[in-house]
Amino acid sequence: MNTKWLAVSFLTVSVLLFGACGNENSSGGSEGEAEGGNGTEDQVNLIAATQLDSESAFAAGFEKFKEVVEEESDGSVTVEVHTNGDLGGNEDELVQNLETGSVDLVAAAPGFMAQSVQEVDFFSMPYLFESRDHWESVIDGEVGDTLTNEIESNTSFDVLGYWTAGVRNYYGAEPIETPSDLDGMSLRTQDSPVVTNTWEALGAQPTSVAWDEMYQALQNNVVDAAENDFTNIYLASHHEVASNISLTQHDYTTRLFFTSDQVMDQLSESQQEAVMTAAEEATQTERETDQELAEESKAAMEEAGVEINEVEQEAFFEQTEEVRENAAESLDLVEEYEQVVEMKEN
Image 1 (cartoon, rainbow, N blue to C red):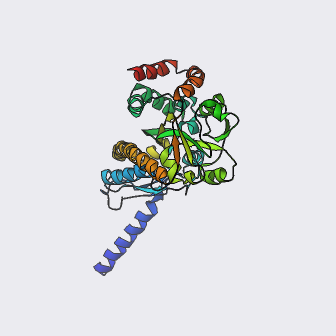
Image 2 (cartoon, one colour):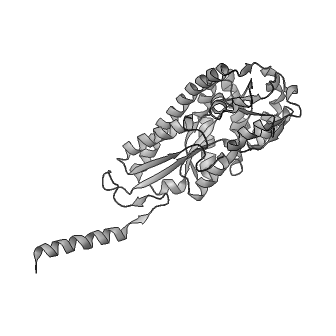
Image 3 (cartoon, helix red, strand yellow):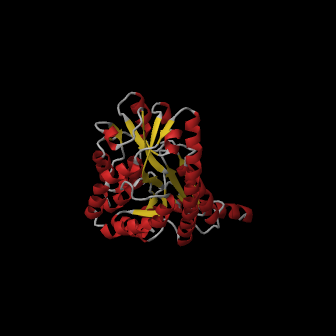
């Protein structure tokens, strides 16, 4: 028999057998030898998604994660980054997509996880932090670790890092200076018990509107005002239809960068290590980018004619004190709350 024919036949059968052994993993990646990798890792493709603009700090964090994890895993883990609400126009939708497996990496506000782990709403308290340094010392310390353990013990989520979305302020067609200026005003807020209680305590009427519907809602007076940070207001062009920003500075924001157990379980030990390394660098990049964008966005909006005014912050702080105390007690995190207050005073 022709030996050349035998060699070709053997090769053909080998290829067919190899192909038959392959299957699809939960993220849509093909399991088998990683193309461009070390030849021993299963190929995994992860989907990262945000409702925010492609120029946002979240997008920068995801891009850094993609860069580092692909390098650290020798290409066996790849990442697709989707922005501008392509895979979900609101954070609650993205969290649901993570649960169903259609998205693998998201960043979201604590309130969108509060139904599963009420303790995480701790970070939604108004005036919990007095500065960015204070926020970082808390979030990267014992209190941050406590909340991470609560989340991971009671959900199928894995926390990869704590991100930020700047410092939130009031913005609307009319400026405010004192809490009484909010009486009866409809104000778009996040879907969180603590956030809702905060604005009710200040006299406003909290209203739920999806982020990708906010421009029209402000333009058509569906809501009178909203609250967010400089960058998100600017990138979403909300300053075009709500030209007054009042520096309530009620929230040095905490955002959760997380994935699911399902995603982590499909990874090898070395791939998991690559993910954690990438998460650390992505977190640093996101925080730094957030600060840079906040300064740029504020300057751009002032140049566009937006009025930015001071408020009587002490009045807002005092009127929301009961909200903080009640939240700490109901969440059974009084000790953690007192720890945060002590760190503030130091």
